[in-house]
Length: 400
Image (cartoon, rainbow, N blue to C red; front, side):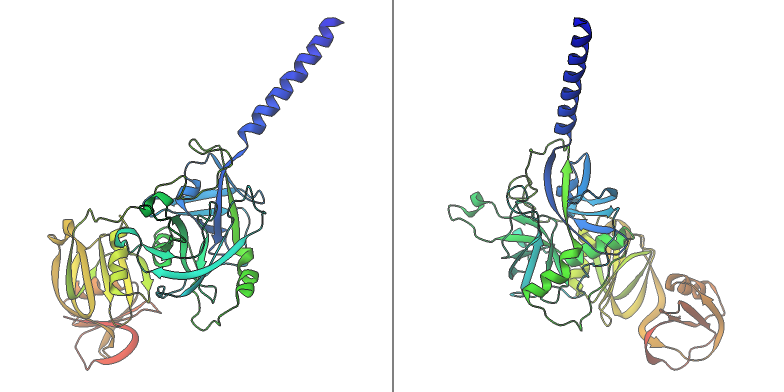
């Protein structure tokens, strides 16, 4: 009888011990913020929010099924087993100095309420520490747990992703106030395109909103991210670069590039940035280790990031940049390429293909003297003679 009672008591104590261990193992070690960028469940946060976690969930317990990281630029895309009809669209144009902005996030979730918070401020600088052009300096108050949250303009369009705040000891005796940093949305756009993740581009026709209207519209797109079982995390700590992650270091290029105005690089385009400046285009390539070359279309303000480079062709509307390792192997074509230009008539062959294949088909065909390529329809028209050139939006032409 006594042995039976002892057995039951020991079993009960073992179960209590096992439950305590299991409960402790599942305690969160950190938290941050994320936001939906498409209706297929993809959201964005900082890499430092999730990279040391053994398991990740949202604040409401939804699971994460897929993760894509860019640790160098502190970006992460996560696919959540819960979809949202509200997403935050990326603004095609960059931030302006002094522009009014709003920051969303879940700061100090272990202390404050579990609801999303909004703060307002301005863009204080168009560069980060050490003139790092990947970052914006912002005055919106940032606390632990804000990391990975969206920075939006007064229309609700994305300008950046909250990533860092200046430590008090960095002030050299003076206490820094509201010196915070966000990753530019243009860099996020490159990251998403290189990982084949769709996103929405904000309309320029949108109207400005009050802070209350911004909060009401965007709140459904913003999530709390909870990190479990991280190898280096501290129990109950919210993710923030001011307490657990070093501040971003100023970028120093480890690769050298050669540039050539008035030329176009023929190579594989893995990402396209729209309505950006030349410096933004060049910096996007420098920041992305996959990028080997760019073509920047000066007329259309398009930036084409390429992971290889085979040929240079003349194009007055283009600017080319190629990593030095490939520039010595580049061949210069005798073709003259024109953007927004058409050569009507003299068509002898029509292809449904991309621009590079269209160019190569004309290059190897002795009958071909010129071509026109219609971007939207992906139509290539090979021509056996060169006629008059006319301006036409959305059409690129090449002449031998």
